[in-house]
Length: 303
Image 1 (cartoon, helix red, strand yellow):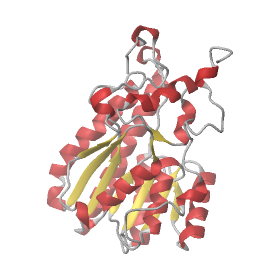
Image 2 (cartoon, rainbow, N blue to C red):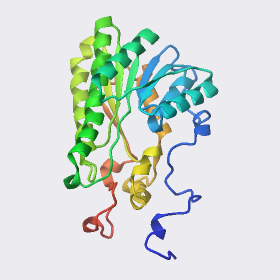
Image 3 (spheres, rainbow, N blue to C red):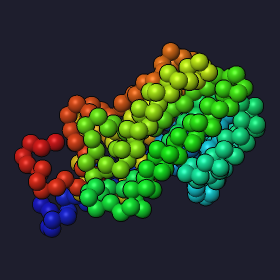
Image 4 (tube, rainbow, N blue to C red):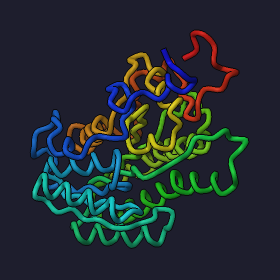
């Protein structure tokens, strides 16, 4: 029996049911994949937020499948560590750059350098983003603008710069935007809900506008995915995240990485303007409360 009110939400660190803060590094190099080793041979991928979480797993898997990879982020130590891990696992060197995607001039330089270094680009993965749990009424102006500027504007700067080069060079391209399932709103995360909804419908619009340039645009909306990003959420919220989907499980960064590989492969050549939700069915059933479920909603049987 718990001895105090917090025991039931702070399981032992060795408890396998405890939410994990990402995939152990040693597993990234050996995790089984459904794809053949040369699936992306000759392909070139650029991944934002590639120093951790879903971006890191995507960079590793893309390199393992034969792609040339460039990643960017704001933490040089994390970028260097990802580069080292991929070199050790695959013998391949990836490109890294410190880039704040909120800065359109920095984005323009980075996109240009990547195109020049690779001789082009096949897939841009807009993974970088961030948010924090808070009731909307308590958002500061700075907090609201930071999330909107990163998740919406930063994604747009990356998309536009890549598309300009695809158009001007007459070469095909593909964009994958990592968003969220916003169909029923996101209580305690309305800032990122607003930004991600903007990206989703921007992507659907551009999938039509940019079709004449042979540029496809798709989105992936992950549900509860175990990454280092779990660190911003209170433990009492984390331990019930997986209960908000009918499978009662959490996904991880590898699940997302494999979905990105599919979209980057020839198998997805006819997929455009789509939003792929991977959340264990949460969209049909439960609600996530990233800051902890308010007492008002905490009733017997509440998801």
